[in-house]
Length: 239
Image (cartoon, rainbow, N blue to C red; front, side, top):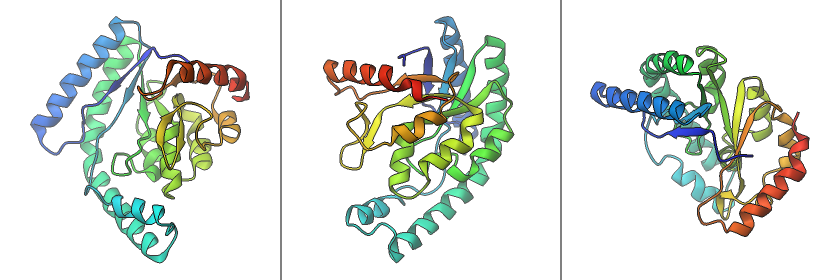
């Protein structure tokens, strides 16, 4: 994997205030210009958040207490998902409007836009809405960008099935952030130091997809080298 050529957009285009959305769009366009100027081929987009905050906090606490799948967990999980999906439906039209304009500029610059799966379930889109979202955004300019650690964290809380999610979106996948995850230490771990079942998942990554190693800044140089060695020994598993 490489550490480039991609760049990541952090400013949200999902804000309800028009002035905030315009500011986000202006910074987004500047990001595209900067990416093209340094020869990047991809821009990875974070689409923002919608809905109530912290609804996942009690779910994480219940999971840590061994109550994953309990009646209380399931009830709160369903309620949270319904709130986030409602907020997404309300915010999506304004997000789509900006994305389509960004897509026109990206196409003119020869860039592809990767829409990243995020760790916080409040961030958009909800995982069941990926197919709808991608169907409304033209390929090849727009595609799905998989983040192994983020998907693993959601898998641990039962928000998605990592393998099924990746298999479903693989036809639109253009790239991935590669790092490991464990419930105790979180994500962005060196490869092989977490619990992600890469043997099952790597065959779902098309050989043409761009893979970027995305480790925590706290990872040592030795662990970075070990992760690169791990990748060189295992990347043949890709489809």
